[in-house]
Image (tube, rainbow, N blue to C red):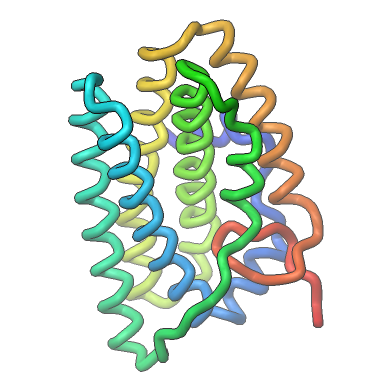
Length: 201
């Protein structure tokens, strides 16, 4: 699974991000929880917007349930570790990718699905990068997420090709990959689960 996923992504997570993540596990876990809620919300939005597409309805319903379950698991770890929940701002990552979404159909849908595939792929890749460096409990949890995140990546991509023209999807992947790589490899003023290379204060 991972070779296919890593080939899809345009770059690996920089080592500097991993180092900062390990030093800021409270922020990492809070933002991870936020990401799981947002992923569930994105799936619900697609379900309400595209009620005439049964394959999408089925995949997104399953995905939303899994993302909410993951949120509950993250929340449990946060509480067990006595990490205080607080509001933290969103990273530039998802918003930066969504700037590429065309505003007319069917491209609005297929662009959104391709971007969903990139977000899930990057999440999976980052879990894999972190696992060897984490304590046993968190490492086991993140390792357990790899399979579902990789499946979500595949689900988004399959739906994109189902509802769009293959040549257009291929071109969209190239376009999104370039922006995603820029967001991941460039300097970032804050650390988040999907942030770029954090800049020291």
